[in-house]
Image (tube, rainbow, N blue to C red):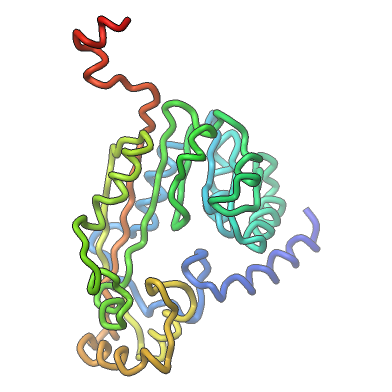
Length: 281
């Protein structure tokens, strides 16, 4: 590992840090504090993830970002592949693996819908896959997973109240029938994955003042559908701050969900074992 690689990684990390917590970098825009009602969700999610990874596992980090989780997994698993659409993130992940002396890391640059990039992933290989704030697993990826693969997905929720007040929540204006907790479980069931564990953590973040909160909203895509626009949004954000100011700062309610899915493979349907199914055999 060369000093040049460390210098390049430091420079790249400094650039990527402007994206804030979305890429797991600490920044000056981070909340003053976070108040958890139980364990820290990030640590709890790590515990679940690492409980499934073994020395024999081949793992896919789908949306690996700058490689923080990927490199931690590589110290436990047999092989870890990272996939991300951001070329600078792939470069950072590669440099991080090099600096940590990890030789079992493989990286692919491409988007979730990029068939040529997906083709670079080996077929029928991955025992464990995860998407940590990344894209959903697509049906085009199924050939890359083992028959009984485990898929772990983290979903960070929008800021409760902020999206609605700034007009970012489509559900305020469009008819909808299903709640946030059900649609993704239904989606994965449709491609052959059963949810075996679903957990949601609720917590609060606190910000010093409106400028601090606005900087946090600007540092990444924390708002749905459109970034924070001071000209359009500041008046509404001032109103939010007025109603949510506490002794600890401006309170924002957040939540994160983690779901663990198991691929069903050739799991038999009830009709397959009934009289009609037996007659066909």
